[in-house]
Length: 257
Image (cartoon, rainbow, N blue to C red):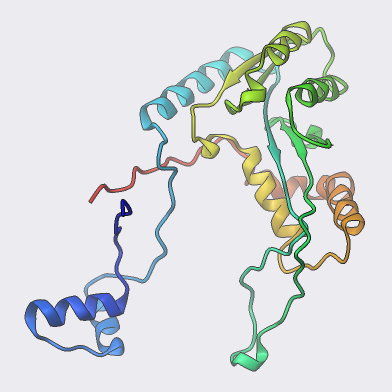
């Protein structure tokens, strides 16, 4: 078994360790109070991609800052990405009255229906966000998506797209049509969703659409997503302005101990 035990420990595990090491017995409540007095708090660890490269992420941020300075207002920079939301509800925390009998119950489904969406986000003009749905995400549809973006930005205006290194993003047909459409591609380092602000938009959309919501059928599910991006999203621009930024999250490598 190659798995590693990572800190932190649970209260019960700490109690067991203290008892084995020093033969001192604590109750759960007693250990909890002692830990609080010592400056500890009960926190959930922050996940980080196992294979991400901190140096490559720093290099990308430097490249991006230089690019942004050089482009100014003349050449738009867009972050693009695909997402695949599923019809099943996304159960999440919310305020409820105390007591097991007060817990809200949300219907669930075993439907495997999912959408294949592509989005392009311009942090300087969030209202110009481009969203399209495709039967699948492949090189051909990425090229079609480039064309959809060009409906907003004139061909004469050079455009920079920041995207991950998925195979279909690196295909020859995608690179060819990027050049034809006056688009320069800038690839993110591997395992770097933290460097793509459109990931925050996908998270926000899931919070608004799927959290604790049951969809009776695929049609309702699809229509709800389309309504959000075409009707609700434009009304949320001001709210999202502080969330959709290039203040990139810095990942911390996991301890090897």
